[in-house]
Image 1 (cartoon, rainbow, N blue to C red):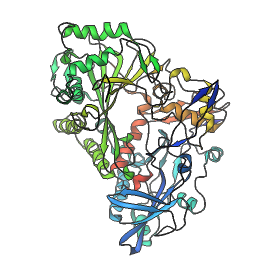
Image 2: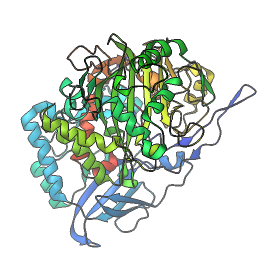
Image 3: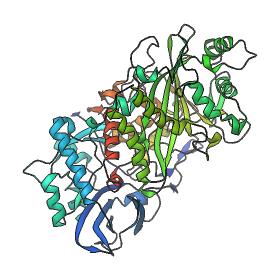
Image 4: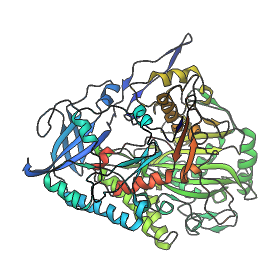
Length: 625
C-alpha cells in the first residue's frame, strides 16, 4: 500500500503533561499524568456571525470549537467559561447555555463581541487580489505537523464553500485517519470550513450566517530570503555590521558580529563578567566530560584545544592574554526569524518566538568546518496585537531591496531589540538568549548537537552552562522497551514526546550516528496510528529532525566555504523535499512532503493578515527547531 502522506490532528502536546518513566526492578511504570499549570487549550475552529440587533452592545456572536478531551488528558474537568484577550477585548467564552451559547457542555464556547467585519472583508479581498495576480501560487498552504498536506482553494464563482484539496485523497486512508472530535452541531459547523470572498462574504455577513475564520496565509506574499532566513552576502557580509577575520575587512564591533553578541550577553556592567571570560569558559566545557541531567557528555578534549582554543590564543598574543574577540574564528551565515515558534497569546502574554544568528566555524586557513553555532533569542510580547506588530516588522522587509542601506538598517533595528543587553531584564544577565546550540563533528565523531543556557545561579552564574537538549532523549534509549511502552501508552490519543521540563530521559547532548538516524521502538509501528505517533515524536527531536526524518545530512544551513560569495546552502527540508518514512507499518510506504520555508512564509503572512480571533485556531508549533 502506498500512502502520499499521513496526518491526524490531535490536542496540543506541550500543554499536556509532565511524564516520568520510573524503572523499578526492570518494570516500566508510567505514573499518573499531571496537569501543567500553563495549559492553553487549542481551538479547532472559530466562527463569527453578524447580529441584526446588537446584544449587550456588541455586533457579533463568536463561537469557538474546542475538543473537550484536551482537559481530560490534562486531568481537568472541561470548564464552562474561557477567559481570553481578543483584539484588545477581554472576552469570556461560555459553554453553559447562556448569553449566546446554545448548549451547555458541547464544546462550542460562545460570546458576544465587537468585531470589525469591514477589516474581514478587506483581508479576504486581499486574498482574492493575490489570486488574480499570482494564480495558483496564491492558494493558501495547509500544514500539519510541519508536513504540507494540501492547499485551500479560493472561492469559486458558483460555490459558497471551496474545498480543501488534500495530498492523500484515497477514501480508505481518509476513513482510517478520521478522528471523531466533533458530533452533531459541532460536525455541521466543522464541515462548513471555507474562505469566502467578494459578494459571497458580504452576503453571509448581511444574512448573519456563521463565517469560519482561518489564519491561513499566502506563502507567495512573503519573500523568505528577506523576511525569514536571511543569508545574502550583502547582509551577512555587510562591512559596516560584520567582520571578516580572514580578510580583515569590515567592522570588528559591528552589530552582527560574534563579538557584539557575546559582549551584550555577558553584560559586564551588570555581571562583572567580561565577554572574553564568558567565551573562554564556554569553550572550556568541551575539554572535559560534563554531567548534564545525569547523563555523561564526553569531552572533545584534543580537538577543541588544537583546532580552536590554541590557534585563537596564539592570535590573541598568547594564552596569558584575554581572547581577542576580533579574531573569533567564525563567520555569520544567516539571520533567522522564528516567529512561527510563538505561543497563542489570546490566553495572555508569552513567547512571540525567537530571533536567531547562525555562524560557521573556520580554521586558521579560513576553511569552513562542519561546526555551526546558533544564538537563539526569545521574544516576549504581552498580547496578540504586539505579536502581530512584531511579525509585521519582519514581513515589511519583503518589500525592500535585499541588502540595501534601508533594508540592513531596518533589519538592524529588529535584531538589536533582542540582542542588546537588558533586552530581557528578568532573565539571567538580562539577556534575551533562550539558548545557544552547536552542531558539529569537527571536534570528533559522531555528529553531536549541544545546548547551552546562561546560568542564573550557582558557581557558574552569569556564564553559559550545558543544558539538556530540548525534547530529545539520550540516544542510548533508541529502540528500547522504554520507548516501546511510551509510544504504546497512547495517553488519550495525544501525540507523544518527552516533556519540556527537566526529566531524567532528556539527553545531555544529542548524537547523530548517521544521516539516516531516526527514533524507533521494538515492534512499532504495526499500524498507521503507531506510525504517526512514532514519526511525530522523532521529528521533534534534535537528531531526528537533523537526519532520517527529514532526509537531512546533519545541518539545515550548510557551512559551505567562507571564500564563496554565495548564500549558504539549505537542506531539502527547508526548501522542499519528499521523504520516505523510515519506519512504516509492514507492507506500507509513506511519503511525507516537507517545505519548511513555505510553511514559515504561510505562517508569517497569516499572522500579520489575520485577526487575533482567527489566530485562536492556529495551533502552536511547539518544536525547538
